Amino acid sequence: MAEMTSRRRTARERAGTGRSARSRVPRSAHADYTPAADRPDPVDVLEKQSASRLPELIPIRYGRMLESPFRFFRGAAAIMAGDLANTPVTGLRAQLCGDAHLLNFRLLASPERRLMFDVNDFDETLRGPWEWDVKRLAASLVIAGRGNGFRRAERERVVRATAAAYRQSMGKFAGMRTLDVWYSRIEADELYAAVSAKLDARTRRRMSRAIGKARGRDHLQALEKLAHIVDGELRIAPDPPLVMPLDTLLPGVERKVLEEQLIGLIERYARTLSADRKALITQYRVVDMARKVVGVGSVGTRCWIILLLGRDDHDPLLLQAKEAQTSVLADFAGAGAHVNQGERVVVGQRLMQAAGDIFLGWERVAGLDGQERDFYVRQLRDWKAIPQADLMTPGVMSLFGRACGATLARAHARSGDRIAIAAYLGRSDRFDRALARFAESYADQNERDHQALAAAARDGRVKVESA
Image (tube, rainbow, N blue to C red; front, top):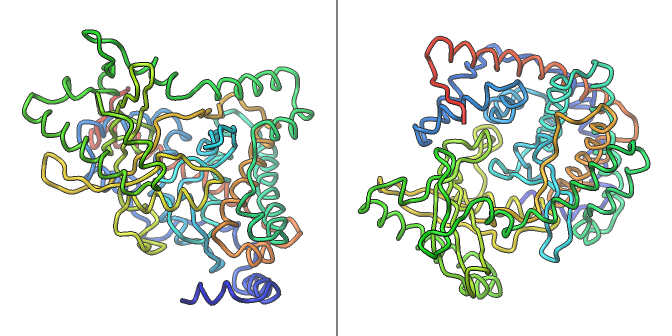
């Protein structure tokens, strides 16, 4: 009820709330990062997560995290959530991505078949302090910059550019009408036009190719990579241990039970779609399914790819049903309003993304062990392009960071008090400079945690596999 009341306040009152927050938490205070005296062992945090995941896949997760400090960071959202809970917070909240590192910003397709730049991953989404997302983004840029050999001054410029874009964009959104904020989006062609003059010829060509490639990365392209013909019928191709069709994963009886459960999941999940999209998906039939290993931090969670056909073999649809566990932020920001974790993911994505997947929905299903688990369902691939951080120069990463900062501000402005947040940030660069210092300190912490996992692997405390 307090939040409903706050939305009825005048713009002046909301701005006053933001400015008054500076007296409690000066913008310079965001530079602070000191590990808590009772900070848990980072490997213990990872192992606690692993306890609810598929045990045979956990070594793959650790193997991926050990590849570099940046890969470790991608899988360490739970560790950072605990650390962020011990940093100063303004008391201003918004819907968070919860894992806002730089590779979770990418090109995506809108339902109108426009190529957008937006936030992508919402497994950890929850309402919480807006600054937690910004700090995770900033830390990811420093960690990636270190991996690329950037000097400290170059990394600082990247983070300050990103923070400035967030701050300036939030100021712009604060002055906009509410519907205009809601309809705001960054289209790929507009982004390219805005930054191309600042890029060298080689980088312009690479960006142009990435946009073109993204438009080709649809479900048909995914199908070519993931499926083949077996006895005249289209089926998902095995690629163990990363892609395991049911007929290679389980014996006959268990396979049949799981197959029926997953078909039921798709049938029931359709109830969470709007009437028009429910009518659309009923025109498809399930023909095959497989378990798929995805990402870094998600490895070990249950993830299924499901092949459906419409009119014929040339009319495919690939859906991904991914297990949704409790957000890593829940212990620190509150559990949220959603009992079903799949619904939490879907609602968070719809709140933050400018244009979402038309097949996005959720369901709860019992596994072979009888335990009920929550899932969210979406298209496996729809015009997606992931940035290549290891190829970025300092200048390119600064431009990319600015796009991420502006996009994150737009996502927060849709659900948070954009006027209060903008008033808190103000027009000076105090917050930008503080964020750069925080990001460097946290990158040091991330390296120590990466080394702790490496030591645990050497000692045999955790098992590691490459895949």
